[in-house]
Length: 537
Ligand SMILES: Nc1ncnc2c1ncn2[C@@H]1O[C@H](COP(=O)(O)OP(=O)(O)OP(=O)(O)O)[C@@H](O)[C@H]1O
Ligand SMILES: [Mg+2]
Image (cartoon, rainbow, N blue to C red; front, side, top):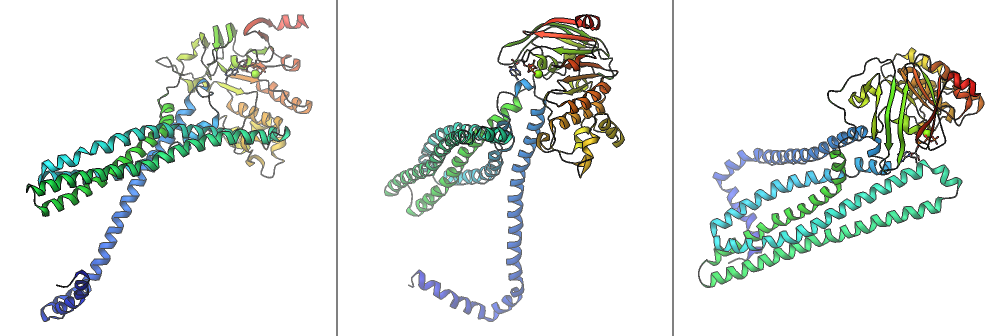
């Protein structure tokens, strides 16, 4: 009898004899053209199916993450400032970008493995049961041995994965801070100090990743070993059954091979389980944000403010930031429509905080604020904020053109209204000097403009918004007298016909107001009207 190799050599000979026979040669001639086409078609079809399989699964992963990212960004923008000042902003960036990458690959891997392998395992298991149920029970005894170590290791992986994402968040926040404050670091030769701190954060991430890698590397040998124990156990029990003629050697051989086949999908499912836990750990922080309800709730039914007169009233208002320190206490204040009020007081007393309560950047801790007699908590927040133009202490612009930065005041405004606002705020004088005029991109946070220029863009935005209430937080601080003159002129024009609260340190800013309110130790210590003001001079 020829051996295996010998048989292989005989095959072409046998084929030749077969094809060479007259009856076969007719069929072969017929099939000659068909077979290559069938081969190519089969591979083509297989290629299309593989492509569709891979594409659809990846698509689900990528699309799921796209939707979560959109939701997350939308949600973050709606949270109260008090809810997101605990971490560095870079850490939030990392949540939106990084934390979800794990989910993306997990979706693809899990869907494929769960569909393919669980159906395979169920099919093989059913077959084994039908062949010999008592041997099958022996084969499944080892399955918990797969599950227990994998579940334990996966739990640790989940914790490590979360820790890893936290570290990546810290790193992103740190890098962002380094870049934002590069000038400061260079001016004070802080580069080495900053580097050391960065290296510490980076080492923390490294040690988390090494622990993760160690556990990941352990999973495959452990499942392999458990699988081998299972196979050995089934072999031992099976051979014993063969010895006592409970099962034939032939049946046992095919049974034994199927058992080995059964363990493979189970091993893969346990590995996917650990990947799933890692993805869950990584995305936990994302879902924590999504689950966080905005503390800015509106009393129902919310009133939609259309055009208001501009009266503002504080009733026994007290306020604490989330750290619990009382900043404002017992604030009672009434500002009439079109009244101009200056708010003065020592640095850190709570002036910016007080005006931040009006557009509900933060909610009062006690008391309430009314606008035209309506509690602002019962007003639809969007409509409340559309009644207020705010020019903040630090002028921060978006990284887009001067024109777009002004247009944020009223996105659907006409070009001529934008130019008009730019003229009133003295933006035109410097914008026209740039090669690209109003289309000049201002750089991150407006870095390509000077402090005074940024302030003028912010004023132009307020002009364009044309809201009945105007809040100016130290609009002429950090300016030279030339810029101050420009800005003072712009402000004098801007304050006409609206309710104005202006926070000021300088006498020149408060000369034209109707009332001066002095804050000290978180309380209003004096309210002087025009007459009293003149008398006090
Ligand atoms: N986000 C915050 N979280 C916690 N405390 C804050 C926060 N913002 C400000 N504070 C604290 O609130 C107090 C008042 O700050 P605020 O900015 O209102 O002062 P200010 O009167 O505007 O000072 P300045 O004249 O210097 O602008 C300060 O003691 C400050 O430390
Ligand atoms: Mg301030």
